[in-house]
Amino acid sequence: MLSKGLVLMTNCATPIIVVLSGDDAYGFRDFGDLILSTNYPTESIRAGDNVVFLIEGGDIPITHRVIKLHEKNDGSIKFLTHGDGNHIDDRGLYSSGQLWLERKDIIGKVKGYVPYIGLIIILLAKFPLLNLLISVTIGGIS
Image (cartoon, rainbow, N blue to C red; front, side, top):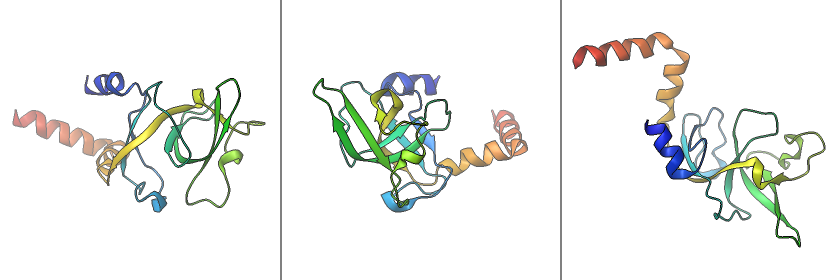
């Protein structure tokens, strides 16, 4: 119920993401950090902003920085992203033939993070018995 409430409040399908790889060039995004994002239609995205996006056909969200905008006369904007720890832009990650992300590819704009708290989620996912033990322990307390 809490997760559904967050989705509605943030207009973001994945308002909370646990970082599974390390790239601390942002000052965050260490393994286990929890990233918080929103996705309001009126929210502008500019160069320098950190965004969460999905590659067409992919199901793993990627959080990288927007480094360039391509603004067209019709008002549409395309985005080029880059991982701060990488030497080149993300075009190699995009779908075949895709040179820019469109607004539809971006599923969130990063608003903040909580360092290392996602480690709990990672541990519970990696060790189901630990999850069960905690559930039984908490269930036995009440």
